[in-house]
Length: 90
Image (cartoon, rainbow, N blue to C red; front, side, top):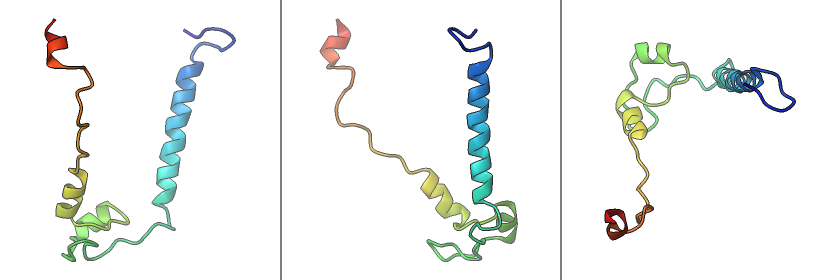
C-alpha cells in the first residue's frame, strides 16, 4: 500500500527497476569488452579446465583459488556491541 502521492506498487516497481539496472550493468561488464578467460590461474599458475572457462567467461582464477578468495572473512569487531555480560544477565 502506497502512501502520500505515490500510487500502489510504486515502491515495488522502483525496487525491480534497480535490480534490472544492476543486472544489465553486470551483463555489460561480461560483454565483448570483458577480459578473456585465462588458461592458467592468475594466482597459482595452475591450468584452468576448459569447462570452467566455457561456463564462466572471463574467468581468471582456478577453483581452489576462487574458493579461498570467496571464503575470506573480515575479522569481527573487538568490542561487544551489546554491552557487558553483566548487563545482559539483568
